[in-house]
Length: 425
Ligand code: HAM
Image 1 (cartoon, rainbow, N blue to C red):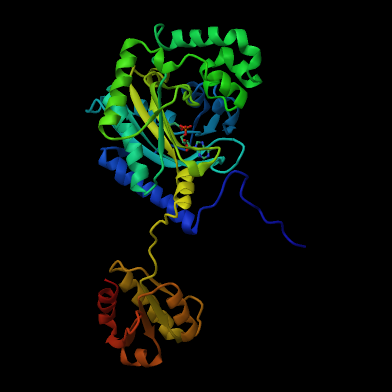
Image 2: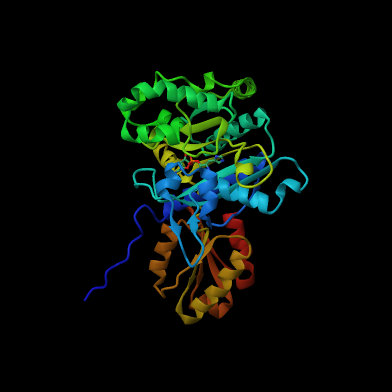
């Protein structure tokens, strides 16, 4: 009888070899780039109270309506985080970060997120994001800095061909977004039957989402609708002008896109998305915006904030399309121990070599000198150390330089690590 193998859950995947290296690279670059803009790393739990996401992201969003992994272990209702912003804001309030000195708190995070979407290229149920949140300032220069930092991040990875879509959806006042929503409803109402069923549902609950419907027929109708960035109140219009002018001054290209409203309800004013042509239908490689109402919505004092999250799997697709490999460290030294005594001595010697910061490996299968040499060669070792019977009898080790024309020399055992360091150094 054969035992059935258990496979990974649909929409999740394993990362190893080249992809594993790219995932790590996405994280280390985040640390380097976001660090330059003075962001500090923050870690929050992978699961939170369901109410946090329902209130934070919005009841009428696709995420909250149908994509959350929600469990009821005992009396709690918890959800695997579908995104990072709500958890960061919860932590910011819980730990009174706003009372700790600076008026602006800059935080970055990285990790897995969970959404029960239909899996396809670039869309998974467990995916990874690197993201930032800048909490405590309404300055539109900060919006521009955040947009620019995302572009900087992609550039630092060597990803070319990033496009930045930009819009302003205004603030939630009677003279701005509320008036715009009404104007949209007035324009759509007489032709509502021509829109798809989802749009008809969105009409009362979340009329802005009609703007980014993917149905080609709706898309054509949307083109004729009033544009949000042309309906802003004066302060929002001024702020948006500053964001655009600053990006232009920085020499960064963007495209104004009136249909960009984002899939989460907490946004106000500036919203943006980065896209890349390698991604196909799911072309958003990252996105974000300002969310001045969220902190009050979650029980804190009214506090302006802006941030973004970048999809790591989508970054990996772009890297792959551009043939950009993540740097990997190969083996620098390989220690061959022959016979029982040689094998034991190899374990001792390799520890001394690694203590010098050298990447070293040995054989754990008791194989012949020839096959161990073959492995050392295949793994790209630059120095091979051989502990055979003769060497052991003399308290020595043979150190072989693997480059073409490289020689070999016997060293007293205590001198071998330094000799290896010279070869690989
Ligand atoms: P989001 O647009 O929902 O924003 O997600 C950001 C990015 O995560 C997307 O542009 C995409 O690259 C990636 N992503 C989203 N869903 C999936 C999926 N199922 N599979 C693979 N990648 C995916 C947010 O999450 C906000 N929290 C961003 C933010 C931070 N806004 C302000 N601060």
